[in-house]
Image (cartoon, rainbow, N blue to C red; front, side, top):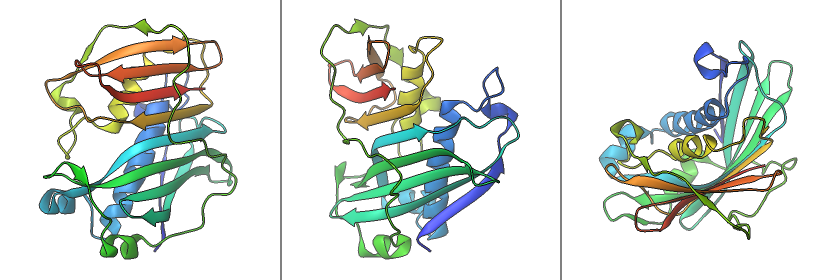
Length: 237
């Protein structure tokens, strides 16, 4: 099976005060459908722990066509459209019961050896288990690398990493970077597209040091570690 999907209503715990689904809740669904797809081919979280290998997300691009609301019945679908060497590319679509497209997305992932802490070749069994499906043609793909804008950045207070931020792979879950960056969005800013690039892992006991740039049309949050290395770049349009 080259595609995988699950259907669920928008829960109360997933909405903002205005009844609209939050951006982190949308990203959680995309993350969950990936994990469900992996579990469906017998290579889910317990396989990762046992074999010390897993996929690591290195970039997201989400285009929001319309925001779901409380009670909407959503189908979240994913598939891999390309595997090459140590990398894989995925598409995602979130639709309503009437076929309305709410979100389209793409992600680049690398296959990672958790013991050696380095990328390794994608096993043949992994590629055969997932299979491939046609690339989403309606999506406007941006470069995976986010170009930093020229101009002054405003430094913000460091954000300590809490135990609750750590996932089964022993590092900060990719959603934490997005949630950290979102707190610096202007209150009236309406997100139509999200791009995220991940460069360095962050682990328990460390901190994220944000730097903010905004020009009215987009907001870029650079998240560094204490040594000044860029861990993630989050761009909101």
